[in-house]
Length: 617
Image: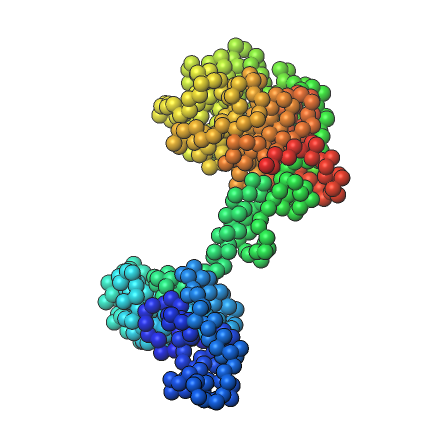
């Protein structure tokens, strides 16, 4: 391993650039300057010329200003590197060293006057990589004075001795390993639980058994590099840079750019090979044929016209393979999503809902689908989606209003209710398990713990109900009626459609209003919004102005307005598995399926923009 400029006999703990002389000359006598000239002194008489004769009064030799005087003058005027510039040089040096360009690193350190790492750290690194454990342990004594936390020496020593112990075991040197365990590791009185585990490895019959039980790569470069990465975390960066520091900084920069991108809708790839470091990350909607835009649903890829009346609800299944739509025409249609083309094809029609279908809920395993009707409907239907058979048709009383439903996470129970004061918990056969009197339910949701049920009511609030201990508590209080709400996958956020106000985002844990989203037209119609996209970074909602609005969760202004429907858009559903697939249901009798824009020429892209309003500033 190259010393990278640290083996020049300089034992100073100052790790800044070594061009500390005010005239900017190299710290190494007779060394090479940045201009490639060799500096020398002729017994202090002057700067040597190319013919070796000294210049000075009466020397009889003319000075060569272009070769010596002007160059030396420029060196004297050389500006001392700032701390940031030193850091960058060290980062570049570390990266080049990782690529094996050691001579380049040496030249960089020499020319800049910087030091890649402290000389003691270099020795320590070399001894660890060569498996010279006694020398590496001695190096720790030199490093102790450079560390902010001297107590870390014990932890570093423990890691060294652990590697030493394992390598002895792999080599079959059981007695030596036992001596390390008893005579060196145990006296440290550190991490005794780990020492007990290490002692168990003495029983391993062969090297492969040891590697498997210890989850260890074995003696060699790989395990020692991993050890060095752990050891470096205890050393200040001024002594030894953290492992692969430049790659870490670049990856953080890429992730931050993606995180701030309003339109990014794909899984973050931690590999730098998947991006260009020469350009900023951009998912601009003004460039619809850009590959960065290929996962954002802004284009009508399909219009489903099989319903013959207003479509009140739509919902993708949990596995993303099906879409269920409910209509005033008394039918539920199940659509199959093609996994390759993402086109939807009619799978089956479920008929007989006399009052129409205004709400649908998939069971957690997507085997069943429950359908509810509007306010004057006292029945709900539980369908087996696989067979198309009606398993349960439930009605407790003809005076009931069962307009909303939510599945318990166990898939064996569900809760249902309506605005006439019904609030039931039932099994799959429709048998009543529990009821809560006097709650006028507008919308329901079961949380992931399987115990709490959230219900919005006619008092402009959302309350939590526990059917096990019969307790309830207030969670959200609005000033206007809550027409519908949905909850994020992690159960932390709730998205509300509030009459005359629009779409509101609440934090259920802190019980605070996080954000009010602008643009949507929301009166007293029941409109259902949703979370969606990768990591649920986006929010979509229908609107009474016939549009679909999309926001980034962090921004109040819409980033897209999708046009095409001709009447109120009642419901939107974002596919939970395919981030670029969105469905919307409207009073115009159609369901629109929105997908990524195809690759278009500029003229076609202009036409597409008319149906997908550009909200970029």
